[in-house]
Length: 104
Image 1: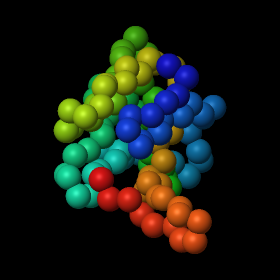
Image 2: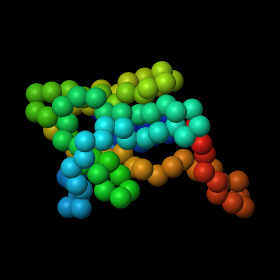
Image 3: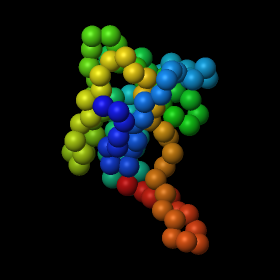
C-alpha cells in the first residue's frame, strides 16, 4: 500500500518517525464524534504520537490492519517496514465564506 483513505481518515507513508513522536499505547487513531465509530490499528506495531498525528511501524515479519469499528469502510492491510502517519486533523467543509468542522 502506498497510502490511502479509510473514509475521511488518511494514512500516508513517511520516511521516519519525527523526533518529537512519543510512544503511546493508543491504537485508536480517529473517532466519529456523532456516531461513536472509530478507526484503529490492530497488530504488532511501534505506535507513536505527536500533537498533530499518530505514527506507527509494523513489526518485522508481521502484518497490521487499520480497521473501522462501525463496518462502513473496508479494512486496510498494512505491511511491515514503512512508517505511516495518520493526521489528527478533523474533517472540514468550506462553502466559500466559512470553514466548518464535520461531525461523523
